[in-house]
Amino acid sequence: MNQQALSAFLWSVADLLRGDYKQSDYGKVILPFTVLRRLDCVLAGTKPAVLAEHKAKTAQGLNPDPFLLRVAGQSFFNVSPLDLKTLMGDQDHIRENLFGYLGGFSAAVRDIFERFEFATQIERLAKANLLYQVTERFTQVDLHPDAVSNHQMGLVFEELIRKFAELSNETAGEHFTPREVIRLMVSLLFIEDDDILSKPGVVRTIYDPTAGTGGMLSIAGEYIDEHNPKARLTVFGQELNAESYAICKADMLIKGQDVSKIVFGNTLADDGHPAERFDYMLSNPPFGVEWKKVEKEVRREHETQGFNGRFGPGLPRVSDGSMLFLLHLISKMRPLVEGGSRFGIVLNGSPLFTGGAGSGESEIRRHVLENDLLEAIIGLPTDMFYNTGISTYVWIVSNKKPAHRKGKVQLIDATGFWQKMRKSLGAKRKELSDDHITEVTRLFGDFLEAEKDGRPISRIFKNTEFGYRTITVERPLRDEAGRVVLGQKGKQKGKKQPDSSLRDTENVQLTEDVEAYFKREVLPHVPDAWIDHDKTKVGYEIPFNRHFYVFQPPRSLEEIDAELKQVTDRITAMIKGLSA
Image (cartoon, rainbow, N blue to C red; front, side, top):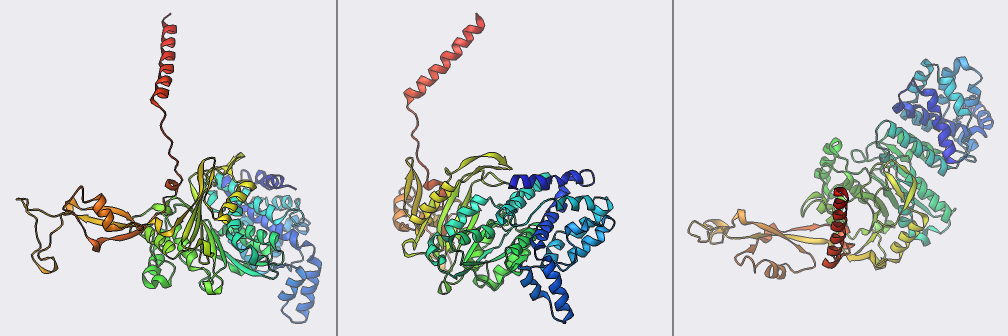
């Protein structure tokens, strides 16, 4: 069954719920039942052997769990004699039997259904006399991995979540990232390590602090499997949304991952992996979402732990917490002596330039650039994400830059790399093709400046080119007679006093000498000015679009005049026609 047909079948369950459930609540039934059927199908082939092993080991007084996992061939099992199809044989006791079947799962699976609050929906369906019909509908579809691959299943979950989010006016994009954007990020993440990752038996870790339904972790795993089936990628994650967490955990269970490494909770307020450092990381934190709910915890960590904590460099304004995730990922990088790290994070335009010198945002950028952590920023087309049409950027950050990248940052303008989708999905109207992903990855891998159709698409800068000093320019305070006022006491005695109403600031690039700039740009206009060096601040910004701006000369006056004459002639002819 293809993905569209499967999504349509699962969506058809909504016909049974209509009237007893609001549209916005359909997902509370369909999502957990889809997960249950998937797990049910996965365990079907080993069910008799698991039951026999459970009986034997229990009779011997042994803990059966490790034996059951081996017999099941999975990282989970079910010891109930029931499954979804046998439940159909006793319509009168469907509620009790379904609870019994769920209770037979191993602890990790029971946690998944608790996150879904599935027990509440079972009771609600039973009272509405719908439980048997809904369960029966799900037994009609084969969700075994042989019939529906893990990749397909992930797409199905995302399609369902998107539909449910639209019905309840929620933002589906908070739960997942378009698959082709993840493929691009994964390609950028791994391209410089292809030699290492191709070695047999290599083991690496990957982490997503905003895991959603697990799409980023899954695609990273698929990439490694394709390039080196003998390599092993251990996944870690954390997710705040209960439904997304449950789906992610179920997906990882079926793929044989250790689901204890997928943690529920708010990453910023309570780091679920405090002692861990990772080889690779990926994240698409929510855009423009305020962090007021966790402000107390974040500020406490910033103030009490400083650079020993996650948020030492600075804090962004409360209205947008995405740069906190950038700092969080930096804190999770494996030290260079242990192999180092690389990560990719999706951010909107704000982290590139918001905040002047000395602000939290500028200090975060300063920390990233002065520690030579930023490898590249890739500008993506607009209308790429499900819940927003704004410009987005992929930052590639690493503490193990190859020698030719040291001290430099590559900017890639991929805003023109897209194809129109046959059908829009929410705000998403554009997508990256495989060729687009290959081309952007090649631009990154080549680390060269490049043009396309006469426009720059790849540029390379020194880190210092993004830095500047904000200097404070003072002018003297004068009394009513126009005389310069001098200080009378202490360190200011005999010194010219500044007039705060005439105070101004200038931004001077780090690559330029401040005194030379001041003599050239300021003194010719205000000869009595001076710089208060005590007030100088260093700032950093990355004016991405400015670096790719191509000047379009205005049209000639002759061309404009000719066009105006055409318009006026047409208007004159229309007036004559009306008066005739």
